[in-house]
Amino acid sequence: MNNKLFVGNLSFKLSEAELSNIFGQYGTVVSCSIPTDRDTGRKRGFAFVEMSNQSEAEAAIKGLNGRDFEGRQLSVSVSQPKAKGGAGGGGRGRY
Image: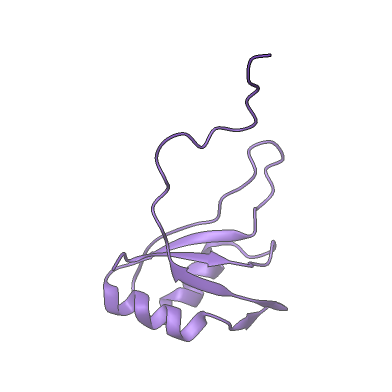
């Protein structure tokens, strides 16, 4: 199992430090990042949290998935690697 977790349905007010503290209740947080929109700089409502080992990652999923935080129900799962290849956007074919 991957120790990197995907956290969805986050409050836009939540900081990386706060998120790290929440997950820190379940073990050692190796890294924590909340992606932002490249154009506006606004948070995108999800994050990636890496725990130090598999058992801590599993504990965080069990303890936090579905938990209400700031009026939003967190979605916590194992992060899936980004698919490689042709996921291009909106290209136009020849006419």
